[in-house]
Image 1: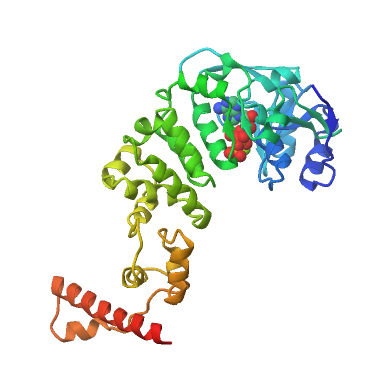
Image 2 (image 1 turned 90 degrees about the vertical axis):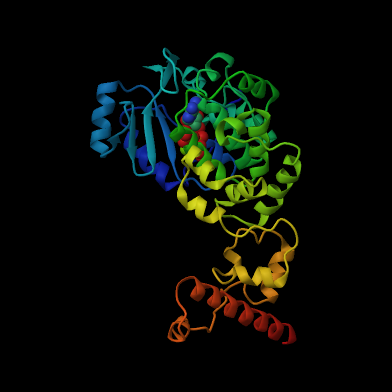
Length: 373
Ligand code: ATP
Ligand code: MG
């Protein structure tokens, strides 16, 4: 193990918590995702702190004094502002399921780090001294972009780690190590509740490398299990679409928009099965054109929204087209007044149809005029 130091002094959040904890212990570490993200140069939103050398009872009163709140069923974990603080612990699998662990206080950093899922998530920095602990070669994996599990036996005890791996891979564009992928192939996610699965899916939908996450979902035979569908021969084309579209469209509904429309899945059935947020259904119902789209079709989408909000505006060509039509920033403002049609005697379905017809004519005029200016 290589030990060096990392300077945390210019982080006022950490200085505050270090000053508070100083009277009680000399071993408190920044751990988990916070260390990983810091080393990746990302902005930190949460700080995970692992604490040694305080017993459970004293820890509780120290946390009370700080005004931290104990949360979950796990009495070791406290929240204060954006800090998660916990006593160092070991986990021992005693029963089925994601939560079937016996938890014990531990006194040894290497043992404390062993319960973590991946080497890149097991790095530790002492918040007082800056001492950097890397028991499982996490720094090297971080530099090489590899997700590697820490321990064969304990890794398999929690199937949530499969989904976590996929989320990290597609968030950071990391490769899952072969030996980890092999273990994952022998695990299954049947013990996970739909809520748990969805919580990870929501994280996945926000990632930058959707194509990579999707590839792993397929490779691990999880697509069928999670989505109730399996994309086959077309999946390379689909992966490519995911990759290219993501460069332009940052919206978290992009994955489902592309997935459901590309494979022409029944959206109602899909949302019933997965119970994913209905907001996504609305977005997945936006118009979908796999191939080139002409000006009129594109402009029609702008009846409802400025084209920069359309999830299908996924390549530069379409962006240019939308800008040329001057419908990129603003939606198409129709001058047709519905009341005039009602006054003219239209109602019900006929009213809707007439309105659409007039608006489309108006739009055609608009496109013609726009071309000539
Ligand atoms: P994110 O950036 O999504 O929050 P994270 O790595 O910080 O990712 P958290 O769920 O916040 O993930 O957990 C913090 C740390 O706790 C992780 O970095 C990891 O070390 C450990 N951890 C969380 N969940 C698990 C798990 N299911 N198995 C093993 N270790 C876990
Ligand atoms: Mg976190």
